[in-house]
Image (cartoon, rainbow, N blue to C red; front, side):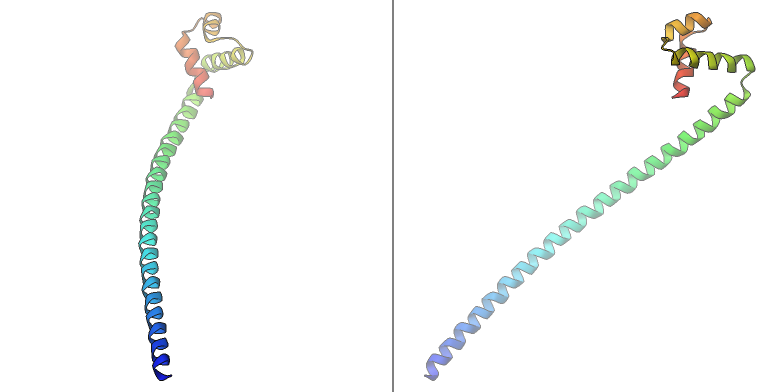
Length: 119
């Protein structure tokens, strides 16, 4: 009877040891996966920061251009302001660039510039 108890204890200990080894393997895999995920997350954060920096630079440049356009519009002589308004009015009525240029006797490039500044 004692022999059978000792045999059962050895089997139980063996199963506990196997379970502990399996658990250790699972934990190791989980640690490897978490390390891999964290490195991927860190890389994405780094890329997002780079994108954010580029966006900030472009926004700053755009704000600077807007300020320059506004300053130029204030400095425009009244005749040019009227021409600007005429171009926009004709465009809003569906006139094409060539037609506006012909009607106002100004270059097509100037019409395109005025229309692009409005957008």
